[in-house]
Length: 186
Image (tube, rainbow, N blue to C red):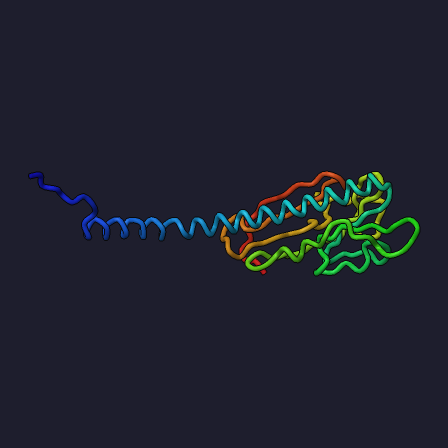
């Protein structure tokens, strides 16, 4: 007659395993939340870069002005007028035969929610040559490097360092994203 031995876990082994898993989860959870917040910030900044690229490409394709709406510095007339915080990130153009502005890219303001915020955004108007201009000025290209504001500044209150992104337009055509740390996000 053979004696069978039970194979399996004892209660003590199971409790030790659960304790180790709980410790690992408590260490990993804050890092995972920070990773998600940083990815959301990067994704929204990339969406703004995409909207700028869309506006520029459409202006060249249509050979006429196309605007990327911002919440401030809106032009007083034409396709950039009427831009508000709720329409920030919207790309639109005015048909040559008149009529209302046509929306080519939906507003990005809707995709931004707590803890991520739009600190500021500016309206950029691209001419048919693909060069971007600020407000009603069509003589001097939009240039963040020479004093024009960033196209958009995003900030995440869920992060303590590397918590902001500035999307800039250099010489009216070169887009760059600058990473920075802000002491507090509004």
